[in-house]
Length: 461
Ligand code: FAD
Ligand code: NAI
Image (cartoon, rainbow, N blue to C red; front, side, top):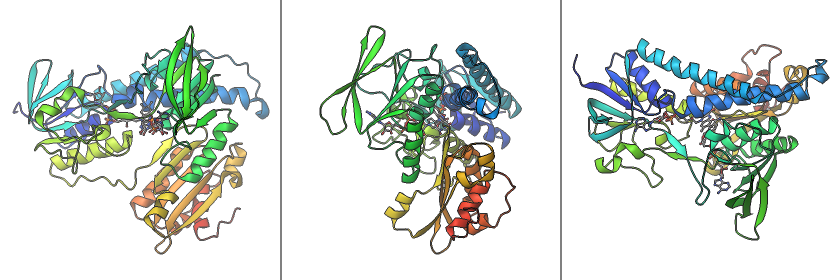
């Protein structure tokens, strides 16, 4: 066999490892280069998986303390944080090792070290040069920082530090009411922290449907999360064992200080391409540093890019879709990603899930639409489970009835959104969901009832 790889993938996250596995399945000679010492990228090591592990265990802790007694279950409660962290680490470890197994199974070579593209078709790792017909950049993203606020990962932390705190902070101040701020803020609030979230915009969760933003704000406030909306953090100073956070109104004005034990900086992420040598090669990036692509191709022949280091939602499943598509395109197949149907989920309690367009986007685009909505309060399974907060909303084209978007808030909606995503992939009408038999009693009946409500014949409210 030739020493020249069909594909050298740089980065072993959801973009990189899925690209390598799909290429292996298609019979291509492929290697994946990863510099962090473990496969799985941000997602498995310091992102999706450890955060969901802590969201799960902290939710169980809170439920046991808050709801068990009312259900007739008596339990003595004590938090054992080291064991909780250990369980999270075991999950991470098993999953990252699982990718090594999948690499072997699909004949993917795993090269450990940081890769630098020295020329088209050439990647250097620790002094050794590898040759390939195609290079796929899948180097992901890193935490965005605030000028003058130095992250030490113990008291001033990014998401990475917030996933490994050794004790529950008395007061946690979160900068940014986006996905990370609300998920990790929820973890530490459930474990006992007083949580304040400072957000630059006048509302939380930018980009989400307006009704969801409002309902989510109400629900988080009910859980005693404090919001400082329309404010920015201008500085953080260490005061003995504590921190003093200076804030002011977004538009400027009188400063207001807030005391905290730990500050979590969660103001977004930026592409990570530092070690690749892109400048020298002349690979085009946009002004925010994202690698510019057209159907995953960069401006240099044979160099492709996918995942968080390119534009679009910074989501593991978006990276995975692009990974499959690029491997298939290189193998001469018709790889394709439908960017209109990429669900987004926030794993708080209640969960928040969306797919497609928001009402605000439809209004702005002048697309005529109908809306159907159904509250979990009227769903029998949600009532039986005592989990009645939230609703499902479905948006469909006013003339064709094609589903254009779905927005949900409530327990378990992370699983329910897949039904609507599948329907949208098939270009289904809301009536298709409304006339699909759903098992009873299930929370997903709320999806059906919301679809019925598009034509105003929901029968259970
Ligand atoms: P990454 O996962 O960042 O992987 C890139 C890899 O490339 C890294 O391992 C890096 O070490 C390696 N690398 C970089 N440069 C080089 C080089 N020169 N040579 C070799 N290797 C290199 N998304 C979801 O969809 N759902 C979630 O629930 C979710 N939760 C998240 C929670 C947190 C706290 C965070 C931070 C993110 C979360 N995300 C979630 C986002 C998700 O992690 C990313 O969208 C996803 O990991 C992007 O995949 P990627 O392959 O593009 O990049
Ligand atoms: P984000 O973009 O979701 O939210 C950042 C928030 O910080 C925004 O609301 C923004 O207005 C605010 N902000 C920015 N600068 C500020 C300032 N100076 N002061 C106060 N507020 C400020 O970014 P986040 O939460 O850091 O997440 C990064 C990425 O990780 C997201 O793109 C997300 O897609 C991904 N992620 C996905 C998860 C999921 O799918 N469940 C979970 C966690 C992360």
